Length: 197
Image (cartoon, rainbow, N blue to C red; front, side, top):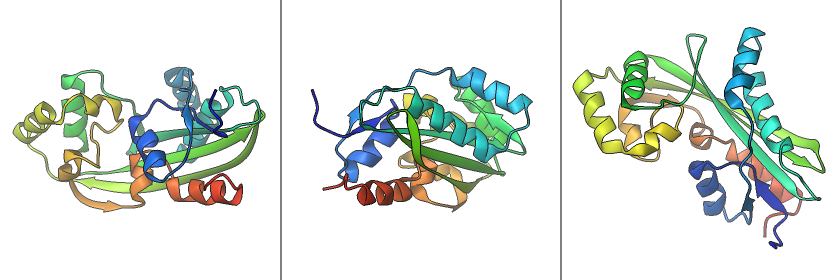
């Protein structure tokens, strides 16, 4: 049994790496929620992007039994022209998505929520804006062929910390928010709670 007081309710490799690299001691217990149906329901109710992102982060965090530990839940929403996107399931869907993003600016909104004993004790939401280059079909095909299966784990079909950075003309916003979690506000909260050594 681990002595850590922190549980990350996510199977996301990027979020796990962020916390590991920051020296946070945590264990992993991925949340098991139906994101697609929750997202679909909220889209129909015309809920704001920030509220959708935060609600998903809260649901993930609250889905894990606490036992006095701090549970971190996080989620990210990609919005282009008021259209929300899900992860691509295959190469064709990834290509269609990247063609749609070409020459345009999309918004990534990431939320993080911390619960303890099934109560929300802290949360934060941040957004970033990313403008893609004018991408040709040949460039996209080459990118997808060389990027590997990682692109199917990212809502935008790119991992900014890898070759996905080459898709962009301009980026405005926090790097960690783009990777999927507002890390700096989270670390500040954990430090105030005495959870960082």
